[in-house]
Image (cartoon, rainbow, N blue to C red; front, side, top):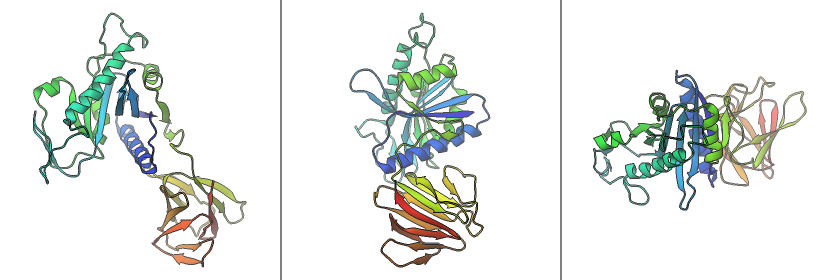
Length: 327
């Protein structure tokens, strides 16, 4: 399947934005590995409804015949979820409840029902059969374990939950669930875009194998002077960036490739930008190390070590000079 990702609300904090990017690219990779043909559209942090209070939705997954509404949850360890009973953390015995004290299945019902109501209300706009007041009959609500449901969890839904199209699954199982489900209608790719972009107000974020924009503008940049070349600048975005000779990115990583310096390792240096507006963290993973010169301190040679560096620090990787700057 070809992934297409939308985003509604942009998280307020650096750590939340980094986490959202990681989850989006992780799910995109899982979708791409699915043998099923067609587009799989994914939307994060959407808001649904026309009257206050609006319903916040963690995740919506759509295919031409599928709509899944997901509540993303991370569990510390194995959980016990008996049919019709209280969910508990097995190690502590503590009940697993939502922030408002409700059962997890109650919360996903609320989110799923809000999406289903909005879709059915927009049926005529989407060109569906106007004689049917509820064409979207089988919208799935899913509690989604991120990055996965803990091993050895015991989860069993009762018959009414199954009839109500509720599921519990892991993040990477979503493409398989989407391939097998049927919402009751058949949508075109254009209709899916209308739903996620126009009806729910999402922005297309990832398409054709790449992110179309960053969730926040860069606060830092690198001024890079390679052997025999004029200086160039490269932005540093939130999260981790890998600097080295290797050209192709692996998994969800960002890369800055230094291809003109044979003394630079394939993955020479990791640069991590979090919330601090004045510094970043570097981690050397090279064979030859990094020479670090702070703006007000002596030069230091580090190998397989981490350092916090302020703006103005000069780094030397092989024969390449890099200076950390504010944008």
